[in-house]
Image 1: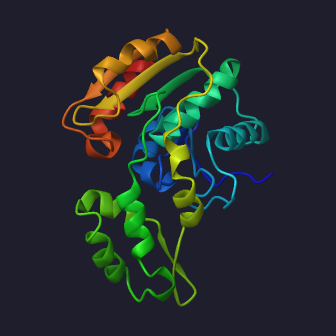
Image 2 (image 1 turned 45 degrees about the vertical axis):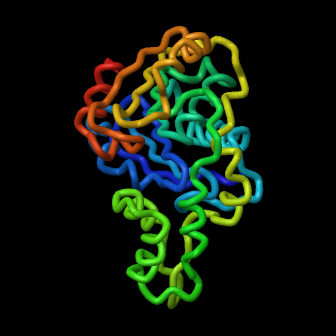
Length: 253
């Protein structure tokens, strides 16, 4: 089995941070360095993302296996898990299967419920980029702009382009992610009460965790708290990093 690509910062109790769909550990470097003043931070790339291995097999069951192998191989004990979006689903699912291995759980802007596929336009835009014939990053940006008008989202997506020999290539496994896109929205498959202390942090402008979702969340996570980061959408940690950091640190204590 392959080990996920990762970066370690700081010393102390382990804090494992996992990015969302089409992201990578690079998205968390700035906040990771802040958390590393108090913790030993592990930033990881999930399979088919960043610099981690590509595989035809993908989904939460596989991402949980990857995380368990990572924790075992590196002999990480009593970690705090923090996951954003798809990474939030991964850490919820992991904690459902390995509750005794997790100290605390932090879930950023995602719930345990099922979400309908909603990344089609982004994937269309990425697929429209002539990656093997690309002559510049600017050329990719111009193609993407037709599908993804929001500059922040485009900048985030452009981080997936890497130099490859004379040209460019994608870091992520775009064919597999596009073909199996419905898996990213799957509901948590283990609906037992998860007794781990859990913090859900949502963006005030995001619709991923609605007020009416909370009763179901509390059934699954009886020791859950909810915090809202004002003036932030789904990428709450990037839009309001100070507020996000403070809310997480208050919870961790």
